[in-house]
Length: 372
Image (cartoon, rainbow, N blue to C red):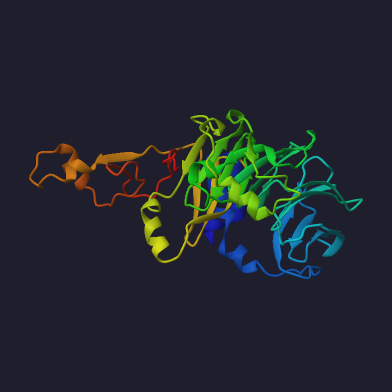
């Protein structure tokens, strides 16, 4: 009990600045607090599965999206439904977000019908509708104090950037494509989740259907285009999706060198083939930044949850496989030094010869191979 004495820790923090982090770590989660957790209320109002929840900036409103195609705004403290908004979507809602600095009046939604819609809570009208994506829209992201912009990630492998100040018209050429994973990963690429750094909104995290979490610097990226075979009013979403898999001209790759960092648990890349044999996939299903923007949390479906420090990127360690092809009594110093470590090659394949490895701990990497 003495270890987590709140009064004593609070007093120590006032006279010793070194207790600040200790205070946070000891009282962040305690057994007593966990034992006091319990169900306070159930907010009833939806007629289908609730797929997404979102707090407003003040924390006094809760938005929910459901398979019943409605968005409900709640007063969570009074346990009261404030607004029920027909979304206008024709597929399950996967993401809802409050647009910042709009007095919680505007909400953006993404759904399984490949569409994105912006709603006015007061008038219950749709002020903007976009059908540019060729796959299910899985996640949306907004940046604090950036009221006119939002970002979307969809299973067509595309990350789009929207600016409500710029007139937008859906056509066979979408000119607001920020990242096209299809170009780098192939036609099976899917963008599963997305997050904006709250203190550095130029940093955009993207999770895909592989174990890598990508961190992009938007300042270095100029939006490009995605071409569809015909006007979207006449083409089906599946026709649009198949067209995205066609070869892209090299000049259309809008990602300059140095604009992206990769983060991955070091043991996972070598396990991808094993997961495929067991019909399991390593997919980033959710990413989120810490409030101070220094850490990135990633939920890897079918595996574990990982926390990466984006300020302390670890360099890859490597060894030459040719050294290990020599007899054990070889005088190769590099072979002896590496083989003395009790660890496996825990890292990323590069070209079949050099393999990155890290000893005794699971690393995060700043670089990963480019897949084409």
